[in-house]
Amino acid sequence: MILNDLLGHILLRTEMMTAGSNAFTADEVAGWPEGTLDFFVWQRLLSPGTPAQQVVCDGCEEGCFMPVEVPPAETPLSTAPFIICNQRDDIGRVRVDPDRLKRWGVDPVLLSRLISKLLGLDQTPQELVRRRLWFLGRANLPGGSPEVFLARGLSWTDAGEIFGHNRDLRESSSPLIFAPGKSSNGFLPKATLVSLDRLLSIRKDQLALDLEAINRVIATKSKTESFTGNVFQKTGQFWTISYDGRTLRLKDSKGLQFLHFLLAHPGEEFHAQRLLAEVEGNASGHGDTSTTMERQFLNDGLNVSSLGDAGPVLDDQARKAYKQRLDDLAAELEEAREFNEYERAERFEGEMEALTKELAAAYGLGGRPRKLADPDEKARKTISKAIGRALKHIKENDENLWRHLQNALSLGLFPTYKPHPPVIWII
Ligand SMILES: [Zn+2]
Image 1 (cartoon, helix red, strand yellow):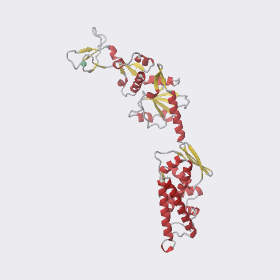
Image 2 (cartoon, rainbow, N blue to C red):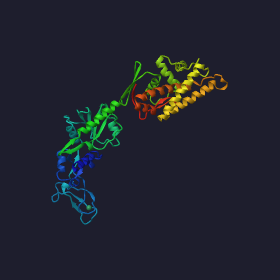
Image 3 (cartoon, helix red, strand yellow):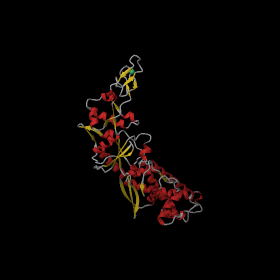
Image 4 (tube, rainbow, N blue to C red):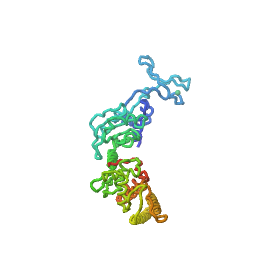
């Protein structure tokens, strides 16, 4: 519809940077359907502005664009404005109809009042930044009660400076910002940006705002925001884990404790022994590495007299435990391969390989027990194993969270949680 197309043009003009270029000239308006200009003026979207100072010459065929000379009012004979054509010598002064110099500008102040009226807000918009930002008030819409702003020039190079640092915008908890043109937003993460180009239209000879669409945008935004409240917290013997709108409760385990610690320190790398000490230290009230590792191994059914390189021997019971673990791993490996979980499979393979080496080292040559592998490797394995088990439980309950963790975790000698893009957890 032609009226709506023109409306789009008018809105885009509001976004023009230089004051002169946002006005419509009489020549432009002459091409509009009859009554259109009057309609927009009547709707207070356009208002008469300062006369044009240049105009296209209609005395020659070259379309030369020349400055307009306006004789002083007291000149006796000719008071009509004229241009001096520079394409043809023979015509000299070309008279210009004064009506052709008329211009109509888009006044953002009027636009802010219009939006305010259409939203049913009864206060006068407050200009926060000259010619750039207005506060219209708090709207009461079914989807929410956002604070409404009108911003001009959100795509200009100074937009980050002007809007990103504006206190009213920053302190608003849920700003809804109308922009005349298309807009993008990197500097106001909390804000909902809507382009008037899509929402303002002419219906039954009246300007109308698509309130339903605005509601949908607000509702979607508040839904998205509730999704970002990711939680990983322990109460009693259970962990409450909320991710992306889904909540699960899992019984406490070492693996979840490791996960909790890593999630609380996104992007940081911890040496496996340090991580072990941190988590064990928190759980038992002390953080002595070798002692906690020893207990971990005892928990796992591996009976060792002490740990570390100076350490020692595996007894039969320990050997059985190793064998059992190898069998478990083989089963898990098979399962992982079946489900194409390459990372998990790789982890199990690595663990099996290391266990086999240890067994060989402990009982291999000459059947004489040897030293255990170094403490680093043990800590790494303890953590991988525990987290692997926790991930398995998580997968059974929430595939989405499992996939996220699978992608964001790396469990080498320096376990770390590095989500891309960053995820906020309430820990
Ligand atoms: Zn000319």
